[in-house]
Structures are given as C-alpha cells and as structure tokens.
Image 1: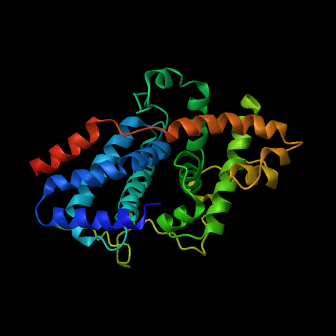
Image 2: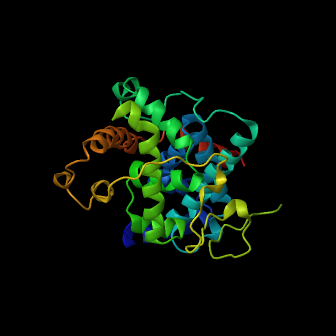
Image 3: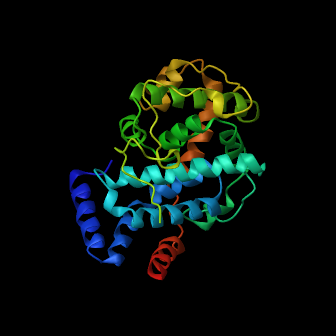
Length: 182
Length: 98
C-alpha cells in the first residue's frame, strides 16, 4: 500500500498535470503501471489485452484527473478493474477464448518467457472458469501479492468477504487442477 | 462531450465506472453459466496460503501442498511481471496527440 509520502507526492504530480504539465503524468504511469498491468493480465490472461486496457485506462484517468478525490492509486485501480470486467463481458458475448493470446507478456527474462509451460496455460484456463469476483480476489491476493486490508480499500469490501472469495477461488482451482498437478 | 464521473464517492456513477461491491452483498457465482465445482480445503491450508501458519501444520495435506507449491511458483513469477516498456511511451504519445 502506498505510504502517506507517496500519496502526497501523487497529489503534487496531479496538481502539476492539472496546471498544464502533461509530461508529469508519466510519473504516475511509471509509479502504478506494473501492479495495474499484473491485474489486467491476471484478469484477462492476455498480454495484448492487458496493454490495451492499461492504455485506455490511463488515458481516461488523464482526462478525468480533476475528479480524483483521495487516493489516486485506488481511483485508477477502479478504472482498470472496470476495464477488465467490461472486456470479460464482451468476450463472453462474442464467445472468444480467454486463452487465445500467447504474445510476449512482460515476464522479466527470456528464460522465464520460455519457461512458461503447461501449468501457466492450465492456470489461465482454470482462472477463466471462475466467476469474475472470485478471479479478481484471487489475482489480487496471489498474483499481485496484496494484503486483504489493501484489497478491502481498493474493492470497497470487507476483509471477511474478500477472504471468503479467495478461499472459494482456491477451492475451485484445487478441484480444477488437482488431478493433473497434485 | 459526455464524461463518466470517476469520483468513487459519486453515487450516480455509471455501472461501467463503479467497481464498488456492497460489503454485505457477497457475490454469488451468478456471473457464470455453469455452477462452480470445488473441493473444500483444510483450514490449515488456507492459513498457510494466507501466510498465517507455517507448513509444519500441514500434515495430512500433502496433495494440497503439492498443488499449491506449483501454483505459488507460477503466481510468484507473474508477480514479477513488468509493464512492457513501449506501453508508457504509447500512452504519453497518445496524450500528446489529443
């Protein structure tokens, strides 16, 4: 979770952008794009789609920056999260596969990219079978490494409710993956 | 030009910009067409995965530990993913074009 100093620094950057310094927006992109990219990738299973959602979300955030009240990181997270949910709704409507994209995905090293194996694909497939709310909670907890308390702030839900969602997601994944991997 | 309100305090925000979930209304699996199959996990496994207990408390859950050790390795790898370098550049370029 960002420190108070970071939140103050965010507001200072926002003030600069609103005063006409467009390039200062790059500071906010640099500060928050990685966790948001991981969220979009985790939710969609597609590097290309995650990039698109990130671009559209940051551009939307830029144009609505004057509306920020409180934490910028929570505000921009909601834009990205909604972008993911909208994409998931559309892809179900058009019957496209959650797993079609196999583009380079921003893993740190070429070795990691090459090492993506069957578990990666099977995990993507299993995540795609979860209801959005469970997938979102699982991705935030296990992929993004957020605490339940931070998730509660970002999703405006209780810690207890989020624990329940994560537990249900794990139990569904256990059922879907255990025959092959346990 | 119409703008969505992105103020999280704005109760009139459109559904597409309002991710809030009422804390009391825990979502059910209604956003999927197929009922979700699952297998109950021992509470010790959840506690371990939540970082609240050590692996020492997991006797009898070897099957679950085997699976989640592999899943944790994969999710840990995803946690190190970074945004492709061209993405921030493209965003700023698009803003400059506006």
